[in-house]
Image (cartoon, rainbow, N blue to C red; front, side, top):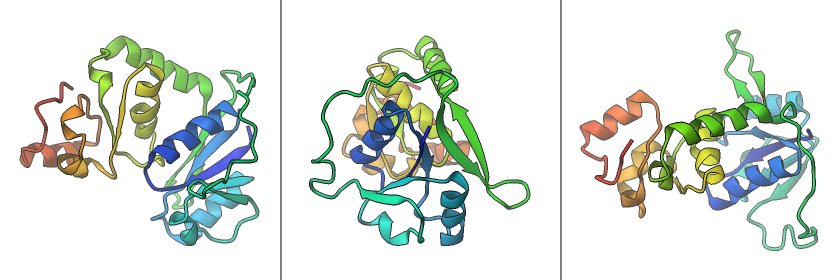
Length: 205
């Protein structure tokens, strides 16, 4: 349950980092590089993040913090680490991630989510959605929002496929646009995509 903050652009490395944190028995604390520096500084301090995983672009926006920064896109950044599979027991009550909401007082509030809750979401999704639908899930939500947990972990846990995008409105310009089968996004973004006629014929749900 070591808090590991993550500040990175949407990439395969970002998804890999989140999975690695969970496999190590730690919990991830998502940071949005677009957040004001004061908010990021508050989250890092409040969460007591021991490590910050960042990429070379987002690291520039990070305020001073007590934790160690590790660059995901630095060649050889993990070369000294063991490649042995970690055998770490994770209890359903162990924390998986800590997301900071805006807070009704304007002061960010950390909401801690346990592994058991994420596992329940994955089990539910496996009963509701078919393998065909999960074969192309659009992942366009910031990791600072719970919806990203569905977009990333549900298809990855159920032999599906994740199609990364910066945001939902980027869908029409994606190289893999015709591989998207399922879109789970906010109503305002979905309404805009429908209005633009930008939902590909491959989408089932």
